[in-house]
Length: 605
Image (cartoon, rainbow, N blue to C red; front, side):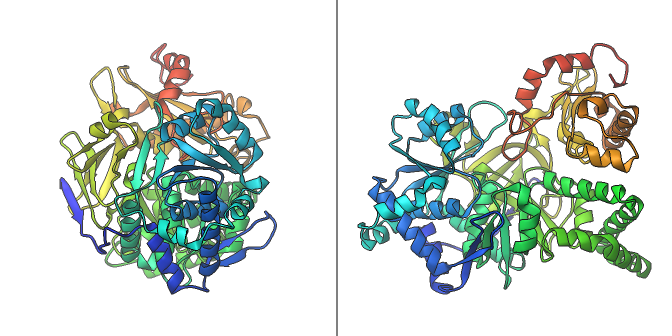
């Protein structure tokens, strides 16, 4: 199949905007809890009703008006995920302005580019450290009038400043935008080059969220639905969920510190969560290593296998056999129920995006009781363009097009998307817009295929396709995704363009190493020592051999090289959604790539 469309489920009047979406929730659930937040890391969760949130939004919006923010102005937010982020976003829209998110890990150079390119007039940052980064960029950002710091009382400052702004002014501004008006400019993290500002409209978020609620009711809007955001709100995926909770009637929580995430999950008890595959891999590997360290590694392995087999049997018309059901009950008591407890005990659904999850982990988690609905999308598609549905799931695929969305596969295999989630264009960049959009179809740069039922599968990135010296086209993602599932491996970059064979650069996972060593009866050692350890190398050799089973001989990894340091957000080799900046890695580790091809001996150097 070359093209598949999902019909629109909910039509929205063109005169409406996101402020109307919030107003409807407030009018429907005036005194019901809409948000819960935890101001102190060890403090309690404090409920905020729809009435209270709306009052906070109006008060902060008045402050923005008093500080000179005009309708259509750009206002920046640079902060971790926290209640104030959501509050500011809704307040900016209530003031008739446009939100420009910045990652709290951004460098001064990145901040300077985004503030300059988008003409941000007022910036709200989380901490004095963020303010210092903004101060470095400020000489080159003439439009920036003011920087406010959340931890130094920015919200209180805005509320005080707006005390004399009449309610009528906010009410007027709340009705200025229509569906076609710009709501936000999100800068793509990008794996190469300068970020481009993706202009997303009120309609992109409004139409997509109300249609998602209609299509995923059992996930996001069942009575008692609640979710905990721990991905950065500067990322479109988290931002989409933050808006989605409003029409869904769900309760939204924020977990700003990943170090307290497990405790926050246990306390908040979400019914659905969103994350990226790397988190699922970490949870699995961590549980496996903990079990092995406690002498229960074999029990965990049997339970994991049972979970996967049981999930696969659910797709068989005959269902699981009686014997398999009995095995599953034992596995659930011994292992699987404990994993559910780690996620708070109430999580039944997870929405995964950003990279392929893989068929094995998809079945494992469904067996645990967490139905992972894998989806696919980009900043330019307001996050989800496709997603598996509760009643229409094919594990290993990224699902069907969202309501009001069409997906087609071009002649060269590139995925193209059209419909309500597709962005209007890149900010002040007509050339890039023209290159990416044609007749409403967005060229994603990703490669994929549609099956006979319209389910999309991702096969790689168009720009990342490796062509060996022998003319073989290789999609690196297939090998990289499989290798990253190994508990010792953190990141993988497959190489081989115009080379005689495929190779790989590998980094070890410093967090996973101690657990693996303990599980295998080995003494503590550093990453540098582990790189030379025979047992570690043997385990990596086996992991490469297993990954190679997914591809042909010509596409298989013949040699790999372990890098001295990991690829992280901090050192600039990962994007905020944890994708590898391949161009930067290949540039900075060119000598390591060359070393792979110095001789023809296969295996580890």
